[in-house]
Length: 218
Image 1 (cartoon, rainbow, N blue to C red):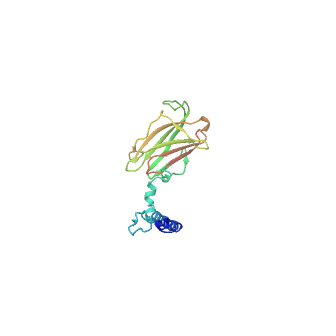
Image 2 (image 1 turned 45 degrees about the vertical axis):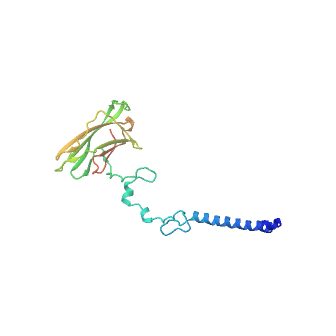
Image 3 (image 1 turned 60 degrees about the vertical axis):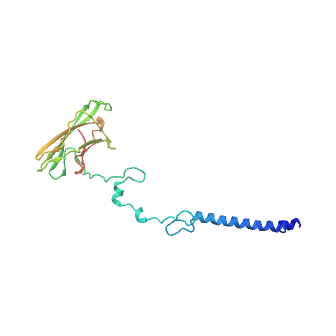
């Protein structure tokens, strides 16, 4: 028996057969790989019959829409707190005028006096200052709350904030009794040459509008 008969025929033909078999195997492997990568054969439950990844679900547009009430209370997308609604502010009245933030409540600046401020704590400096005396009259039959009182003074055309001094100071009470008038005294560092344009801001309570007094101090 010859060597060609032992090996089963023409060697060149055998090589062609093996090349064809190898090519088929490569093609089949590529098809299977592509099918696994794209999720072919996934059933209705989203699980692949060949072990592939489940087909992604469509996004729910209703779940992506935020509730307006929730968006107002939450922070903004950049992490900063969402802005709150601005407080209502009354139109400015003269320094010697009367403001009525609510029925039966009359607020006046009893006096604004130029004084020489004395530093009492670190951060304060000696120098010109204004002493502001605030009167709150309650003509109602119920207490008038002043529990969140804030007093600010601004000066100059740019409304520069004035630093409040620890002394002299006498705070208004947390509430004003019916048919009573309460008084508070506050001092602010203000340059002597800035007395010509003063703005006093009073915030008595969150339930009342912010009050403004504006004018020049003699």
